[in-house]
Image (spheres, rainbow, N blue to C red):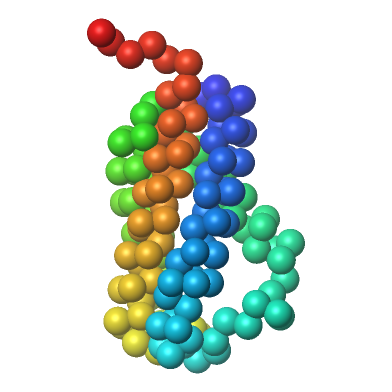
Length: 140
């Protein structure tokens, strides 16, 4: 795995995650999650440095996985991102739900979160796959 592409892919993936998180969770689905959560999100109380670091770490995790899978285009990155994102979200959401520590109050909210995370991960994975494919010559 090329370390330059790993780092660039991680940064690109982290930025994509951050922007998509704002779009999906902060704007498009905010009212749904507020209505299906034990604690609505209050961005005035967010710890922004932790949010930024968390998104960058997600970008680096997916960059590592996509690099190890030798994905080198947007399609393969998106496919890997979708599957890994879906499995990770379902795992964490159901763990929290099983111990009554989850913010989600319903299985419907868990499913919506998992699908949202999978879509975000697919888009971030596509961006990372694009980074890994940069500089490769395509077959004519």
